[in-house]
Image 1: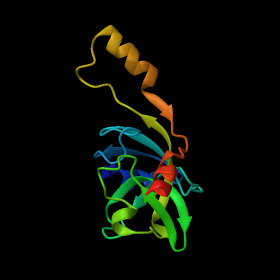
Image 2 (image 1 turned 30 degrees about the vertical axis):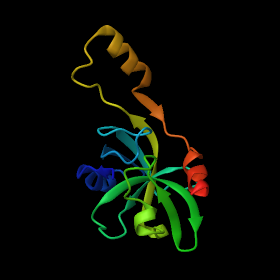
Image 3 (image 1 turned 60 degrees about the horizontal axis):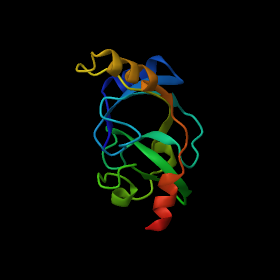
Image 4 (image 1 turned 90 degrees about the vertical axis):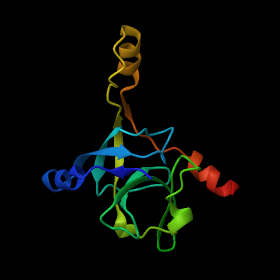
Length: 145
């Protein structure tokens, strides 16, 4: 499951509304890759389809990134975009509202060390920074189960 770097908590205290978080793990592939940086709007209103940062319900010192699928009684049902990775509401149920800390606004994909050719650098420049928009595909997947 995507965890966030330890600096996330420190930055959250320095910048009350916006912070940077690093993604680790495969559960949000293809939307987010291991090593992606997220600009997170702490305390933002969450809606279905938003990519959110939350405290893990059983390990509250662990911050994770998931997609908010729908509001249910007791909180949010969250899923990873990679159905095979697990570590979402199918494992731990509804996440209480107070554990959802904010939502991702922007994704930055750092340049990999091997991307040195002009073509690779040009491809990276075109896709390195992208806004994170709500995607309803996770909601459709939930209804199909």
